[in-house]
Image (tube, rainbow, N blue to C red):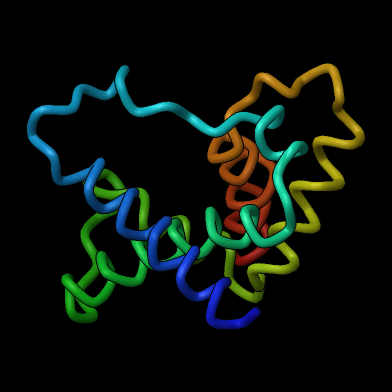
Length: 127
């Protein structure tokens, strides 16, 4: 079971990475995961999505080797600060709660919900 989860997470990261580095893909060709897909997904799929985002952030942080770009240059440093103290499970649970409470907003992209419901409040409380 753990091996299967690791494989799915690795596949998700690979797909995200491939989509991001491919010069032939345009932004409108990369689908955004919405609350509809989120609420219909298994716990493992939700975790794989979040692992992909976390791995992307970790790669960017490692690339900058402790010298993060200015906030105007990248969202990654703000993402990391805003989610400080969160775990994959707390983010997943927070998204589950938000979409359950806002079932009329299932068209909202998950990444937007993470940003405005978790990162922005996290940034304000970590000042």
